[in-house]
Image (cartoon, rainbow, N blue to C red; front, top):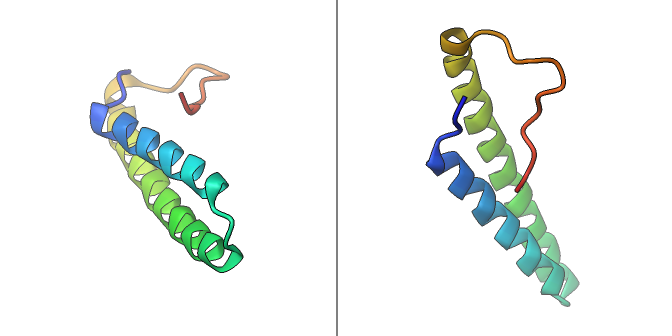
Length: 71
């Protein structure tokens, strides 16, 4: 099953934002950005889950041990 490019791009963007968070030194700003990143990640995960649910009937069950992992 091929993962759509839009979902891959979404994950890469989230990874890039996480890397930027690591560079922040102001704790208040870091907290605000961390919450925004977490919320965006939850929405991205929901999009991936929805896509997988819609795609699953078309391809059958996933093999045991098959997980989506960040690139």
